[in-house]
Image 1 (cartoon, rainbow, N blue to C red):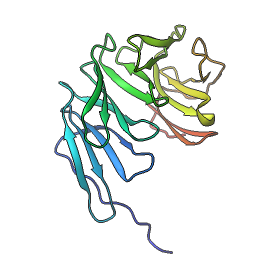
Image 2 (cartoon, rainbow, N blue to C red):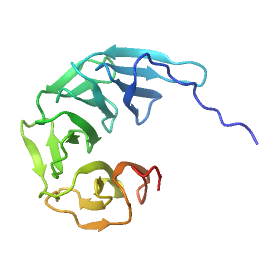
Image 3 (spheres, one colour):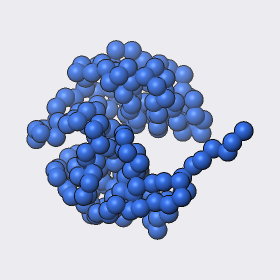
Length: 210
């Protein structure tokens, strides 16, 4: 059996809060505690830093490439949302005070729409269209903190994890209320990773990946 080839680790001098892989190229974007965002081209033997920018006054808490890889959405503790150009790192769009509280969660929904969450966890699921100044859609109050989210079923469904350990299933363009829910986690669902269009893994505060 041949040994699997894996890239060497990327080294940073500050803690990394978030990272995202380019959909088609060997690029990784990383967000750090000092508010900097890095873009590296990675390989098996070495890595090349493409650029570094500091668009935020406080820590960068989320980065995500858009579907075609031309831009990188990023969020910060200073409540700012930025869109960075993948090739240059230049800020092409920025929204300050996007939430009343510091941002801590980001999901790119399509080329121009994203979902964000903040430190308070007010129980609402909100979506943004970067071309418009106000929130695009907001759910009813779920009376629970919404902590994690992933798109499945080729983007037609969203799975959302909560503080109470419940997975709720939402239909695209129908953000008023969930369609179904899955119970069974004894603690909060802090992370969701999509394996394929029908399968997800969850990370819970009980220390178990399911």
